[in-house]
Amino acid sequence: MRIKRNGCSALRVGMFLLLLGAAVATNAVAADMPKRKAGLWEIHSQMEGMPGGPPIQMCVDRASDDLMQQQAKEKPNCSTMDVKTGAGRTTLHAVCRMQGTTMTMDAVYTGDFESGYKGDMKMRYSPPVQGVSEAHMTQEGKWLGSCKPGQKPGDVIMPGMGNFNMNEMMKDPRLKELMKRQQTQGQ
Image 1 (tube, rainbow, N blue to C red):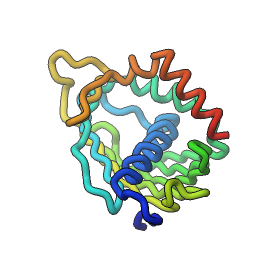
Image 2: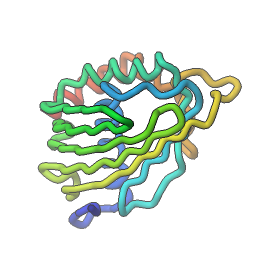
Image 3: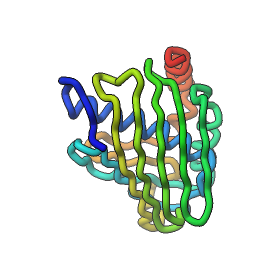
Image 4: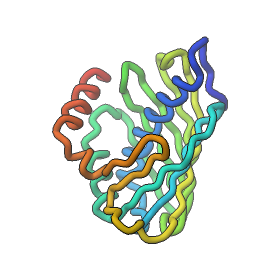
C-alpha cells in the first residue's frame, strides 16, 4: 500500500502521518504489549514512499514502559482498541479520532521484546489528512544492550533533532494541557 495523496509536499505529509500513526500505535500497543527488556533500544520507523530517517535510540525500563501504558489508557479518542497477543505475535485494530480525521489502524507486531520486535501498520484516514487517505509504516526495534553512561530511563536520542526524556515530557503540565486540547478538537 502506498501513500495516496493529492498534490501536497510528500515529505511534510509523510512526517505528519508518521508522527500521527506512531503516536496511536505506540500508545495503543503500549496498553497490552509485552514490556521491553530494560536497556537501550534502537527503533527505526519507515513510512512507505518516504525517505527513511535515522533510527532513534531510547533508554527504557519497566517504569518507562508503564508510563506509556498509563498514557495509553488515558486516550479517550479511540472508539475501538482491539489488541490480541499470543505466541510472539500481537495484532491491533484501532479506530481513533484525532486532528479532525478518523484513523483506522491495523497492525501486526512480532518478536520477543527481549532482543527485538517488528511492526507493520496500515492506516486509513477519513477524511484524508492533507490529501492522504492511506499510509503504510513499518517499525523495527532492536535491543542494543545497557543504556549508555549518563542515560536514564525515558531518554530518547533523535539524530539531528536533539535529546529529551519521555518520562519528564509526559509529566509536563503544558504538554498535558496541549494533549487535552487536541483530544477535545478531535472529537
